[in-house]
Image (cartoon, rainbow, N blue to C red; front, side, top):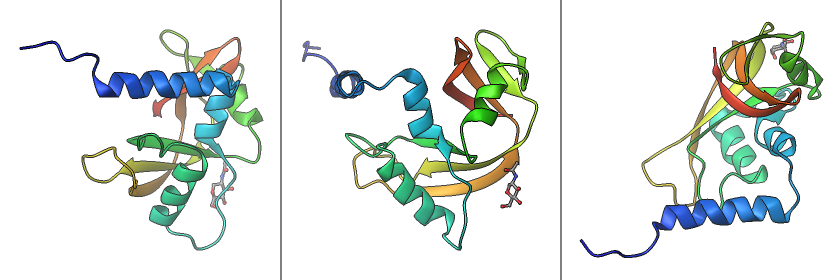
Length: 144
Ligand SMILES: *[C@@H]1O[C@H](CO)[C@@H](O)[C@H](O)[C@H]1NC(C)=O
């Protein structure tokens, strides 16, 4: 089969990385943009919440992120604490929270990552596993 150049998805990943660097976003800043959200109030359903939050937090372009969890807290401190005394060390740089958090997980509907992005959401109250670098959260690993 003939060589046709780099996969388009690779170019999109490189573009996204370049855009992140261009706007001077740190890994901790990106973690907060993608995963830290105020407590949910009011009657908004999970679908509307996810569709609006995934967009306003910059996860729907250039492609729709497939899945993303928002951690509902008034400020980032209880999450940062998981990198220290509020967590127990897991393999690599991962830490398991002792506390439970209110969570909303958004999942892209359909197979295509091309916008417009339609999400379904569900909520949980569970501990989380995050990755930390120099005592700051930089990666959401999973709900535990
Ligand atoms: C989780 O959400 C419930 C319902 O909104 C709220 O009463 C509770 O205080 C929240 N817990 C935490 C740890 O944020």
